[in-house]
Length: 114
Length: 109
Image (tube, rainbow over all chains, first blue to last red; front, side, top):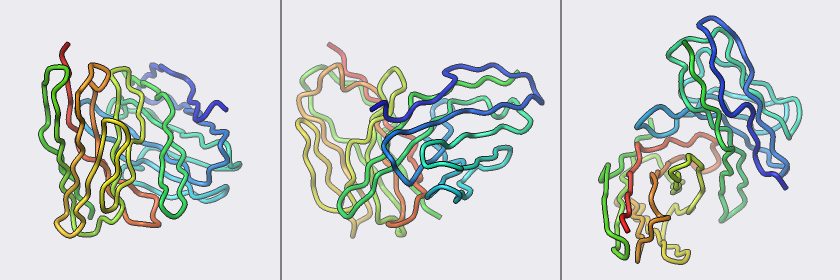
């Protein structure tokens, strides 16, 4: 049981390049999310999904796309990278039932846009 | 919208001390959670605590929903407790969570 995995761990891009951050979970959770964390700040929600084929925008969706074709995978696409997207990106899956609500985070991807 | 504020922003303690971290949240929040981010960046869910009190070892959390605040208590602190503690608020049944800016806790040996 690997939990939530993210690749790559580190990435450097040039302004205008595109790339996809991969996220996968093996816990069969319906809910998955992408967050970004900037220095000295909490996490901000980019996009989320409540199940395969269903996605929605969070607080800071501009410049990012997502899709959810399977329960396991939730990739995040940067369409045209900008220096303002330099950040650490966390993927999370969520298990919620009655008195339980637990988020499982991946190890993060540190992205630098030059 | 949802607002979440944490205090203090920084806390430095000696090993063995107790600490209390506070989270104030806006009226619409009825889903309150606490997280720990260790010095290597890994995030762990500590508590789901929309109201009442929960305990897990040396950590406990209390949320007083009617007064819009939550407290995280750490007793007999250890160096491994260092890191950033976040609270996050949301609405039951909704996926969105809004994170506070965190309290950075440093436990010195």
